[in-house]
Length: 495
Ligand SMILES: [Zn+2]
Image 1 (tube, rainbow, N blue to C red):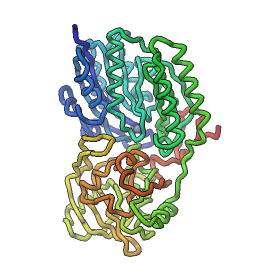
Image 2 (image 1 turned 60 degrees about the horizontal axis):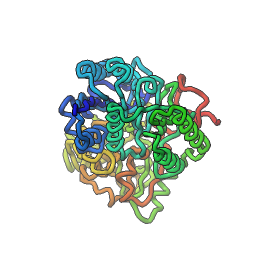
Image 3 (image 1 turned 30 degrees about the vertical axis):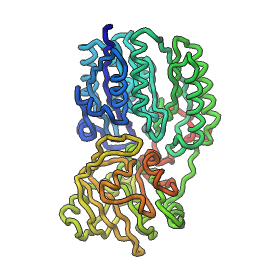
Image 4 (image 1 turned 30 degrees about the horizontal axis):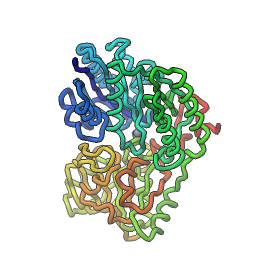
């Protein structure tokens, strides 16, 4: 039997269009850039690439052609330079190899300097190189904003089912199986979609609570129909000023166009009817810290919703840290503040030395002010760690050079603050442990993460509180100057 040749490429970015800092080639290279055979280094990780490559090993007669896998920390517009470089590599490989099928690991919320539908532009160019009949299956993040060209050029879109995203490898494997069975003529995918004018904030997109839990149960019921190949919901990335930002349902059937559409409509209506349940219940900084201090046992997590670098924010926001220091929070640890200047000062000071400086709040005027600190340098590391929680397990993490500063609070309390050079979402307990802090022994943990931390932290924490802080991932959408977003959209508009 002739092998089925499958080309694989991953190029992913979640673009916060309100961020002034563009995302260029360096941001991708620093975060992980695997070219050609190097993609195999991701084989046993819980990533899309890991899932595709592991599944390819299990499937007889599949030959993989890995081209590239790269992703950058969410941030501002992707530059045309890196977009053309990476897309060009994929395009050239498709033209040269003329594969039987293509699997792409995308995010679905990429915006570039020139392309509002970045992922759609990748798919357009790959489709042009591959020709009309080659199946192209794209794995997406749950936070995709599905643009018109994505729907036009992909054979099927397969978003993650989970938030925190713990099924990345599973969905990659599913994308590969669908691409191969389509290439072999065993199925004929027909994809329908339905837009739902909702752009809810993170907390209630969490798969463990309503309405997300019931929505995904309904998706899996739909997938049990033998005529259905796959179904999914993109829950939207709201901090993107795009006409098509919002939730989108996709259903792919085996050759049954009308069935796909009626199931997508039905699922869309189900979601729309439950929109009020997406409204988050959050606390102010003061309320959250007082509530945490009243808990008899820790750790209590305080989620810094407004400054989640996993949604493109600065990671140097000071609102929550200021509260911890100034309101007397006992035995707290904070992950993290990205402030390369202060890391440099800590390196000069050395372990055990005293440092007085201004920390954080330096990127822009959206994330609080620099706060004066008096601190002891507790540790200094190269900032390398390996994720060991359910999300990104096995992947190498890199904070840049990192210091732990024990900052003095107003009432004799202290907060151990991880200060590092790079923006990184602290979604894994390994970040604390790599810096010599045992998170389970702390009373209070401040985290710059909205939901992803739940995968790794839930087993060790007593309570989780969501804090309404300012920043580029604020859940108060009225703070953002949307111009292109299609209106009305809930909850920005009261519909
Ligand atoms: Zn996501």
